Length: 207
Image (cartoon, rainbow, N blue to C red; front, side):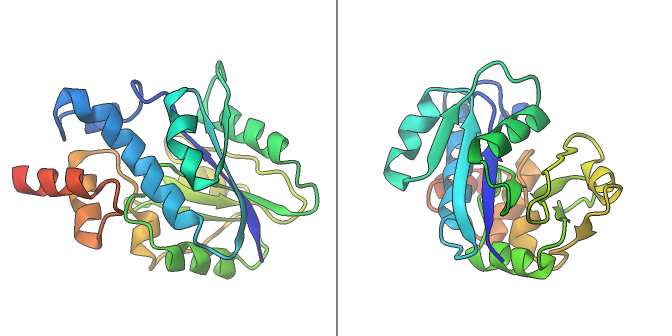
């Protein structure tokens, strides 16, 4: 199975408020961008990912992604993460293919783990929960079906309620999204991507 993935991200200045304090204030946006870059770098190495589209609202993000070859759309004014994902799915226009959503804060992501989750889904609507079991790091629609994202508090249960099957329970790097300093420390133990590595090292020393 192959899939087109959408990676949504807020403006860098507004993103990851609970992560503030992990690095000096003037480096916070650099850290947020590093999380995205490592997520994208891993996802682009997965053979089952046909296209990768980043939906953002910050002019710095397309510039940072130029050398990656990843598609990026600067779409301002969308009211929510779910709206950004719906916009991205419409932009991709894959009526017969499968589309999915991948969170932008998976700096320890291993390509093999993302590939395994896609394979486990086997064309079914599926989701991967975060470490807490309440959030969602990956959502996959069945081929030809709408994405119908339900991100927000309790999104794992919300996606399960749409008959999505849970996948990736043993895939630690896919479940390790980074919202807090503790999350970043956990991701550092798993092994961070190149862009986030120096921030993870700083966090580990501080904690």
